[in-house]
Image (cartoon, rainbow, N blue to C red):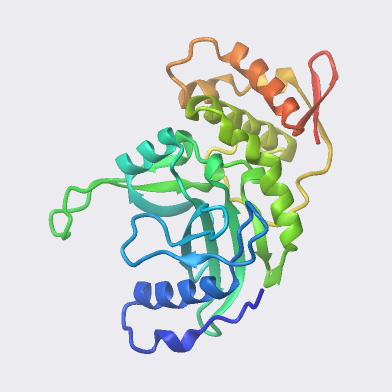
Length: 274
C-alpha cells in the first residue's frame, strides 16, 4: 500500500471537499483492497452512486470512503438519517473506510475499516434539519458515533503512517463476520454489550461518546464480572427502551460473545476478554 496520494489532481478544484474527494478516491482505486476476500483491488463505483464509492470485483462487497484532513474522533458525518436507519435494519450498509491525511503532503496518516455488519441503530445519531437557507432545507442528516462502535469493529489498516498487514485486517474482519447472520436488533444488542465490556476493561465505563483509539493492543485477555456489566444496565436500557428484561438480555449477549470467541467464561459470574 502506497501512502502518498495524487495531490496534483486537486489543482482544478477550489472546494476543499471536492479536492479531498477527487484525490482520496483516486488513491483508493489504486491502493484499497477487499477485507472480505482475497481481492487486492476495488473498483470505483459509477458517478453519483448513492452511499457506495467502491465495490469488490470478486465478492461484490460495497464500500464507502470518508476522508478528512484531521483525525477522526467522535463522529463521522453521513447522509440522510432515515435512509441510514433503513439501511441498518435491512443489512444494506456498506463497509466504511475512514481515512485521515496530511493536507500539506497529501499523505495518508490513518485509515480504519468499519465492517458493514458492525453498524447498529445505537451508533446512528440524528442531526438537526438543514436550515432554511440550505439548498436542501429541512433535510435531516446523521452522524455515525464511533464511540458506540466497539474497538473490535474499528479495524486499523494504516496507523500513524504505517500500513497494517492485510492478513491481520482480513483475520479481524473474518472474526466478526458471524454478526452478519444476525438480525439488526439482535446484532445491536451484541455490539452494545461488547462495547460496555470493552469500556469496563479499559476502566472508562460505558463508552457512549468515547474517543476511539486506533491501533492499540486491546485484544489482551482482561477479566471482568457479570456484576460490572449489570452496573451498566441503565445505559443499555436507554439504548434499548423497548426491552424490559435488560439483565436477561445481558446474559444472553455474553453467551453470544462467548460463541464468537470474544469472551471466555472463567467461573460463575466471571469472564475474560479474549
